[in-house]
Image (cartoon, rainbow, N blue to C red):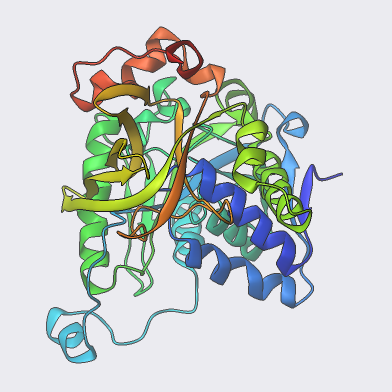
Length: 377
């Protein structure tokens, strides 16, 4: 039996709500998740994912993900598309399915199933839709327990699994395969370069990647199982809290074993798109004048309150609408919003010394030691 499934639009909304929180400000576009899944359940399709424990050792899997900055870019007009060499119409084949089929053609093998690199409203939902379209399994696992800005930070990569062979595709029919790559870091840079071309035409256009081909034995050893189901249950927790007239932010913190650290209004947002990432700072001021600052690289990574560090990656720093509890991506966070900040513990798999080197604040260039959020507080 599947470990989890979606059968209605309500299920999809709850799933996306939970995934957005685990996205910690990144993880892909929320509307992309809705656009991928809502039409399927409205047609009566049951969206299922497979329990990691049911995976056979010799089955073949690959990751599917979208790539590129979440920073907003104005879309090109039809005239600009033509003059820049793009077709005016996109393909009907989803980019992830095209990337998957391109990789299979190179491998000369059929992939049993796919898995997401990270958790997020767009980057966990679109692989599920692609798996359904391709008629293969989606596995209930991921490689971080949250969203991450860099491909090289995922647990499969940190375990030494090579990025290549990998295939890329976009909505205009571009597809290419990388047969070898010296490092995951270079693979990341290559992917960002490719996605920059796609996103220049339309920020919402998906540039997709199929990569990190593994057998079932490796998948079970180096991923975190159960987080798709956990995201769905978190979304359902939020819905239930609102229906019962309870404080949804408090219920979220309880579900995540986290801490509500600050509530106030977003008074300043500073950001830039650089090297395929969205960098920036968010400033949230409480009614008593206390000010929080969050530094982001796609996702939220460091939280200060009145100048004192309160939480850092890999722990989850999430921003919620104070009234509804819902999260959003940093693309959509705007000045004037009333929000609450929750910090919650990272999965234990991210807290080993080896993995912290790729996820802690020093990785991002800050002279700050990682201290688990429950110890800081």
